[in-house]
Length: 297
Image (tube, rainbow, N blue to C red; front, side, top):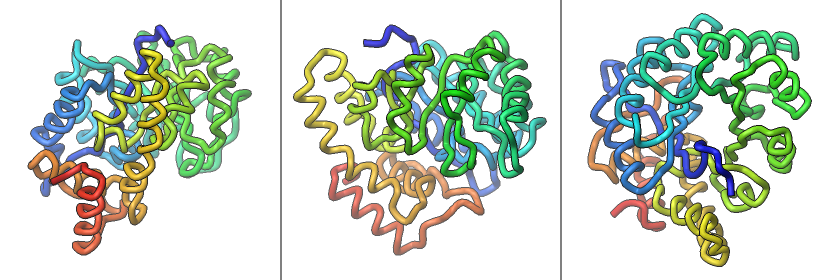
């Protein structure tokens, strides 16, 4: 059992945006309060499902302030600041610090070719702005084309004193143990395998499916913590339909907004272009799939 304060069920929620392009404060609060009510331990805000890399600096700052206020003293907030430019990422860090978020997380440099030296320098700049905050890196090579390997993480450990850990979303699932052996806090970024990740030393899971079915993942984590492995395994066996729902039509942000809008009875908006949006027919398909597995009425 991990003794870290970063542990458990950390949903990666979508970011509700209204028709004027502003953060929908009411919808953000509704999602976070719902997840908190079901026992979630923290949040990974403005990640890939949260469309963080394409938020404007103002949207990111507003989202940080709302999230920090709602979660203060109740749950950990790990706020993602990865962006196309270093300047925008640094603005995100400053916003998260002002908002009182517990930690900063960041994708590696985006789009342009990078090497290990440029990645290390980028992370040193981002983490250095908030040296008194815990810092997490975000390993998502499927989208960034940068794989944060154990050897690269070792270099980052030597250069970044506030590096706390990472969200590991790469397909190399077995690396979880490698990162844990390095003394890093490792969250699995795969909501399909929360139990195998815990058994390998992960402190918990960060992913979009957790925000749609927080009760399911909290029950699984609590069963693991209490040593009730039969119940944990039963719940593990039922995670696949939840994950499959989120990835319908490869539109995870829009799927989450559609399902949460229906479940919470509040408009969570649509995905931000150019992120994939569901057609009207696809939205109906998603809601029907959510009904079949009991996520909505």
